[in-house]
Picture 1 (cartoon, rainbow, N blue to C red):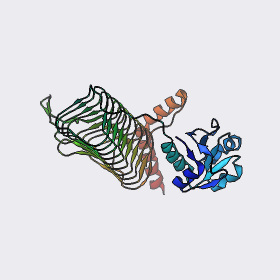
Picture 2 (tube, one colour):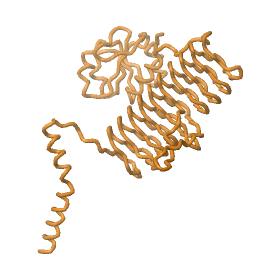
Picture 3 (cartoon, rainbow, N blue to C red):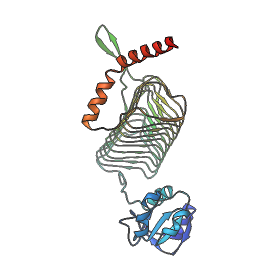
Picture 4 (cartoon, one colour):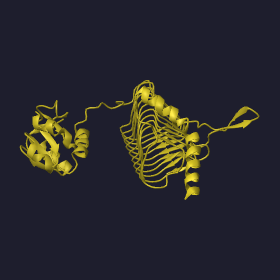
Amino acid sequence: MAFTLEQLAQRLGAQVHGDGNLEIRKVATLEKAGEGEISFLSNKKYRHYLEQTQAAAVLITEADLPFCPTNALVLKDPYVGFARVAQLLDTTPQPAQDIHPSAVIAADVKLGERVAIGANAVIESGVVLGDDVRIGPGCFVGKHSKLGDRSRLWANVTLYHNVTMGTDCLVQSGTVIGADGFGYANERGEWIKIPQLGGVTIGNRVEIGACTTIDRGALEDTRIADNVIIDNQCQIAHNVEIGYGTAVAGSTVMAGSLKVGKYCIIGGASVFNGHMEICDQATVTGMAMVMRPITEPGIYSSGIPLQTNKEWRKTAARVLRIEEMHKRISKLEKKLSDEQ
């Protein structure tokens, strides 16, 4: 597939500088791009790559145009432009083509138009699959689950029963949605399982990375709103709610009944306590341990940056003495106060 620069400009609302009839077939980096390839510059510290690029065209801002030695599409946000061009030129294969003979599909499953189901997939009774849904090889879709139009599951995704997914969703391989939440009562040392009777409701345009787990609710549903992106190997516990437009980076752990607001950005390997709320537009940097609610938008951190082992040993020794240091400082403050 190829587009002329003029066609791309019309799709992006960009201005063409150079040959509008030039055909673009691929996206590439500034350093590696060549004939028929388009790249982008969104950070001025990489401007020296722009000056040397062999790309057929570059997505840039007006400010970078004087430094561009080749054809250009000028727009406000080159990175967003690059994302849209990459979608147009995407060569990623579909998870499945047609319905494979080895797929096991219950007799009452409702199939939309142009549904594709890969080899050895299992689609249980009561499932509803919208138009253009694609189910990869080895997937399992449990009873009474629903997938909206154009949603895709890559190979070996498991959806338990009563999982509802909206339109235009994408789930990467190995992810499990709708497994039991971690719900137990304890009677004199014996664990008594609490059946997890809720489901999982996922909105539209949600993307979920590989080997992530989203547990079903205990009584009501775990809920993921529209336009949420969740990275690989995250754990979303039962009855968590994640608001519109929030991004969750890899290996994040969210405990049960956590409520995360809209447009939050969660750094990788963060850990969240349950039964609390995170307000809209909160940014949590990587490896943060969030033990209390966040009530004001802003940037929050708690991870300790990397140090040499020698420095870390000193830091750890001092941390262990914080209580002692606090008492000594309090005594000194009291003494100074008394002398005044």
